[in-house]
Amino acid sequence: MQPDIGVRHYRSIWISDVHLGTRGCQADLLLDFLRCHDSEYLYLVGDIVDGWRLKRSWYWPQAHNGVVQKLLRRARKGAKVFYIPGNHDEAFREYIGLNFGGVAVVEDAVHTTADGRRLLVIHGDQFDAVVKYAKWLAHLGDGAYTALLGINTWFNYVRRKLGFTYWSLSAYLKHRVKNAVEYIGDYEKALAEEARRRNVDGVICGHIHSAEMRPMEGVLYCNDGDWVESCTALVEHESGELEIINWAASRRLLPVKISARAAA
Image 1 (spheres, helix red, strand yellow):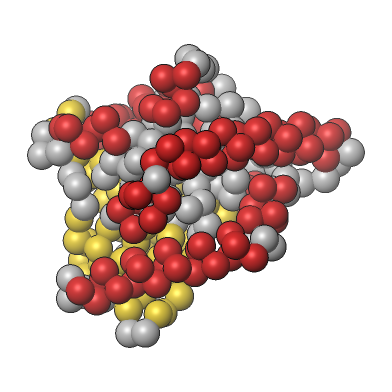
Image 2: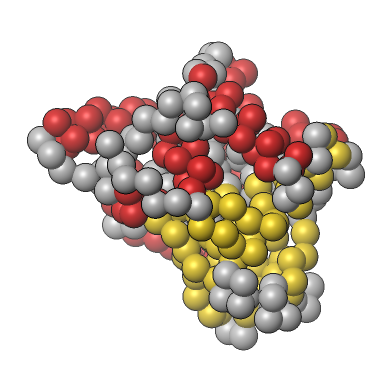
């Protein structure tokens, strides 16, 4: 049983790559994060729902439904919620400009922090050469990635039984394979260049499941990570300071089971 740490309030929260509808989605841990964190602004930075996977086979447990309900409840309670579709939930791009239950669907956004910085918020698949020019290859890679996540799930099941904390095998391999490292580097450079082109102070994105925050040639590059491998979010303090929260590391155990009442 995880201790109750109370509710922490932030000015803004960014989450992406939840991949609801897949077995790799850590919906229970995301519900735990949302229960413990509140904000004035909430940005859903793409791939919240995995339409690619749901087209092949239906998987939608109660925890996934709980995440959707929790997000809609935030909007009803007055939070400014923005949904920026990604490539896995690209069907929602047909509804850009509309508002559903207080959730505004937008192509991208420019967020102004409390200390005056202007940050482009975008999923980022538009700057992924594989997704943009060879979508069939992206789907093929998605299948291999799903298989790896299946191995990762069983690997961490054994770790929990032995008393160890969560460790992402897929993230470890991604950061040690030379081509993957080069791919991430090229992606980050492309997003930083887009921020400079749009004359903003930085960019906040998702897509590659790799949380990061660092300056890149005069602009700030931020990636809020994902809720499949690392279980991370980007938050803005009331002062405007940005921080990446690794919730899996904070809670020290994955997954966290949340009761229906706690998820409300």
